[in-house]
Each structure stands twice: as C-alpha cells, then as structure tokens.
Length: 333
Ligand code: NAD
Image (tube, rainbow, N blue to C red):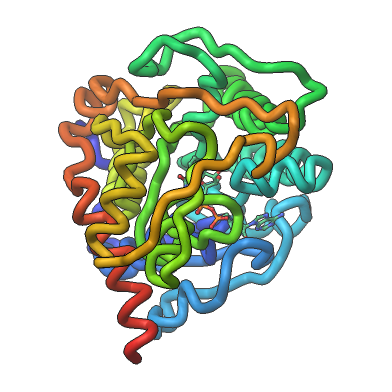
C-alpha cells in the first residue's frame, strides 16, 4: 500500500460539500488526524454552518459558493493538493422533488471538478452511491456487476444515472488525462448530523421515537439495508484516496450487515425507550406513484478490504446510540 501523503506535512485539501453530513465529518477527521489546511466549498442547500461550528481553527476556510460555478471551482482546485468531491443534490426525495437542479448539480458539478483537477493531476475522490446498482438483484453488489435502472420518465432514477455518468467521466479522465481519481460508492452512511428532512431513515425514525410519534415505515418493512457509521466512511474515504494503487478504480464503501427496516424501527424504539408504535405506509404515498425501491442493498466489500486492509467496524447499535445521544444531548443542553 503506497500512501501519498505524510499526515505531518501540511497540504491544502479541498472538500466540496464540506458543510454537509459526510463532508463535515471529513473536515473534522482531516483537522484532527493531519496538519492539512482545509477548504470547504458548499452552497448550504442541504449542508449547514452548524455542522462546522466546532472547528475552531484557522486551518479551515469555508467558501459559500455553488459547485456549478466553473471558474470558481477551477480556481479552488488549482490551489489544492488533493480534492474530495462530495457536493451533490442528495436523497431520493430531494431528487424527485427537484429533478432539474439535481441533475445539473450532479453532472455539471462533477465535470467542473474533474476538468480542473486534470490540469495538475490533482488526486481526486469522487463520491458515488450504492444507487448506481439501481434495482439489480445480484446481492451482494460487486463493483463490476451490471446495473439495472427503471424508465427515464421516473425521476427517481435520475440520481443513479447521474452518479453513474460521474463515474464514467472520472474513469475517462483517468484513462485519457492521467487523472489520479478514485470513486467510492457509499452505502447508507449514517450517524450524528444527518438530517431526517430529506427522507433519510435513521434520523427520521429517531426523531419520531423521541417525539413519541409512530415510526413511519415505507412499504412492508421487509426491505433490508446495511448501515455504515460516518466515522468509518470518512477514514476509509481518506485511505482510499491516499493509496495510489486505488486510482482509476471504483470501490464500495459500506458495512456488510443487513437489517430489515422493520427490525431497525423496533431497535430504535427499544434504544430510545419510546412508547411509539410503527405505521406502514405505501411508497407511493411517501414519494409518487411510479416510485420503485430495491428490496435489498448490500455491498461486497472484499475489494475494499484488499485495497486498504480494512472495512467498517461500528455496528448498528453503536450508530443508533450516537444518533440518539446527539438528539437527546441537544435537548438537555
Ligand atoms: P449532504 O446533503 O449532507 O451533503 C451534500 C453537500 O453538498 C451539502 O452540504 C450541500 O449543501 C452541498 N451542495 C449541494 N449542492 C451544491 C451545489 N450546487 N454547490 C455547492 N454545494 C452543494 O449529503 P451527504 O450524505 O453528506 O452526501 C455527500 C456525498 O455522498 C454526496 O455526493 C452523496 O451523493 C454521496 N452519498 C451519500 C450517501 C449517504 O448515505 N449519506 C450515500 C450515497 C452517496
């Protein structure tokens, strides 16, 4: 394994989407574990200044701008030694509600970053998603598996398609312009600071349980997901980009520990000691009539383990306790 960086040697790191959920944890990680200067570019559409409020250091600069601003992105990338591109319109609900802005952000934003990074061969991480596998039923999902999407008339598939196009683009920049780029497909990354506002299941369930409201499970709740603690996700993201043998390749980033959404709801109720019940509602009521949701989504993480020698370690209870503690501490404080 070749590490590109000495953590004690100061570099400038650009994180797009740095005020977001994963991005802000990556900021924390880099400020804590390295001597780097960090620039967080974010338009605060789903991110928040409060995510960065504990970073009291002059090693962090926050740039409130849009990733679609090509000149600005070119300028910031030119001044960076490495780039983590996480800015995106995220969450199925947001994509369904704002398809045009979402597609533009997720396509143009990534091209702006890649084109600028290619000029100086700046090592770049591109955040992709398990959504790229679409409705494939080849569980667990391996990076080279075929993908299966629904119709283009269903805006739900726009997110998956844009992320897949980002991957094609990144791999093309690697092949034709020698860009040292690595693509990480995140699988249900969860933990403190994630908002339930855009349909993410764990924060939504925890907020409902703490309020004593019924937990609303979409569909029959037998669908399974593997949840990954955000702290595992950011340290793995960092290891992937700083390991040069990963460049030009795609990696699943996730835990391999599936839980059904019904089990998840029951566990949230137990851990919050809540009197809440569970209500099932059809997907069509939560999204729209043509909504499709895969039953299972579990990563094959053997390629990740082979590349960096490790995989996520935090289990579901640790994740849930951290999310619950964040909300209850905020109430007490
Ligand atoms: P997030 O919404 O918290 O982070 C995205 C950030 O990008 C936000 O801070 C938002 O304000 C910013 N942003 C959006 N549009 C922008 C624009 N036009 N210009 C500048 N900034 C903009 O979500 P997250 O969960 O932290 O996601 C980070 C990345 O990881 C995204 O690329 C997402 O697609 C990917 N991802 C996340 C998960 C997950 O489970 N959380 C799963 C798969 C993929």
